[in-house]
Image (cartoon, rainbow, N blue to C red; front, side, top):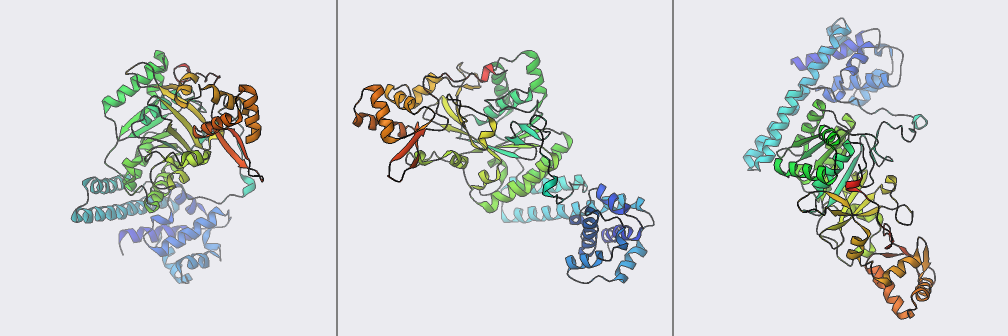
Length: 517
C-alpha cells in the first residue's frame, strides 16, 4: 500500500473512529474534497460523511446507520462493518492528525494531475505540436506542484429557495457595476472589430472605475481594484494608452495616482486553457482584486473558437470556477468576425447584437452581460451598445426612455488615445440625421408608435410633402436603422417606432469621457 493510500485510509478511519463530528469539520476546514482522493472506497466514505455533515446531523458519522449504505450506493457495492473496523483500527487516535493527513492527500492529488499534464505535454512534443501548447502544459504542471494541493472552495450546498436574500439597492456587496449589470462571480463580454480600440476603451474604463467614476454611463458600485491580463500590447503601447487616458480625461495629480495604484497590468502570452486558468488562480491568490479584464479571448482559449466543445469547457469549467472562487468580476475582450451584411442588419433586434462576437454563440450565452462596439460607417464615431443585460445600466435616450445604445468617438486631439461621448452633430453627419426629411420622420414618431399610414399623414402635414415622397423618406429611415417595424397588424399594415437608442437629432448628447470625473 502506497503512502498516499495509507493517508487516505487513516484520515477516513479517524473521522469514523471518533465519537464526535469534529473530524469532518477539521477536514472540511482544510478544503479537502472527495475529488482529492485516489481510492474510490475512501472517496465515497468521505463524501457520505460530508453530505451528512452538510445536512446538519448531530451525531458522529459512526453512529449513523444510513451512512454506510449511502456510501455503498455511490461506490456500487456493499460496505460491511469489518472493512470499517479495519480503517478505524489503523487510524490515528486523535483528530489533531487530520490537517496533516489532509495536506498529504491534497498534495498527492496535485502530483497526479501534474503527472497527467506532463504526460500530455510529452505526447504533444512527440506529435509535433506547437511549442506554446507544450509549454502551457509544462507550466500547468509546475503550478500544480507549487500549489501542493492548496484547498479549493468547498462544493456548492443546496439552499432552500425561501432562504435566498435580496440585497437592498446601494448596499449589495457583490455588485460591481450598477445596477447589478456586473457582479462578483459574473462575466461580461466586450466585443468589437479588430483595431477599433477595445484595449484602450477597457483601459479607460478601468481608470474611471478605479476612481469610482462612471465610464460611459457604466457606474461602479465603489472604487474598484482591477487586474488587466493582456497579450497583445507591449509596455510602450500600454504606457501610451495610460497617458492618453489620463490626458484625455484631464485627471488631477491625486486622481491620476489613485487610478494607477488601483490597476495592475499583467502580460501573459504563453498559457492557454487549464494552464491559463491555473495561472489566473495563482495570481488572484497572491493579489486579490475586484475585477479582472482579460484581453483578448483568442490569446487564452487554446482551441477552436467556433466549436462549442472547445469554448464551453474553457468558459464554464476553467474560467468560471476561478472567478467564483475569488469572488471577482470578469470582462473578456473578444473580436468580431466581418461585419454583417446590409441585408441582415435591419432585421436585427436588440438582443441579437450579443452574438456579434466571432465564433461560437456560447461566448454570448455564457456571458452575464455583453458590451459591443459597433461600426456605423465612420472611422471616428461608433455605437456603444449594451447587447445583453443593458437595461440594468440605466441609460436613457433623448426622449427619456430606457435605451441600450449611445455613440462614442475618438478624442479630438491627434495622438491622444482616449474615447469620449460623440456630439449630436457628429452622429448626425454619420447617420444622415441632419437631413430635414429624416428629422421630420423622427419628430413625428417621437417616443411612441404609429401605423405607417398615420406616420405618412403626420409627416405630410409637417413638411407639406406629397405622400409618395414621404413613403420614400420612411423607407430611407428604415434603411438607416433610424426607424424599425415593431409589428405588422392583421391588416398587413406595419407599426413603426424610433430605433432603440436613436437619439433625437436636435438633442445634444450628454457629455462624457473627459468631463466625467
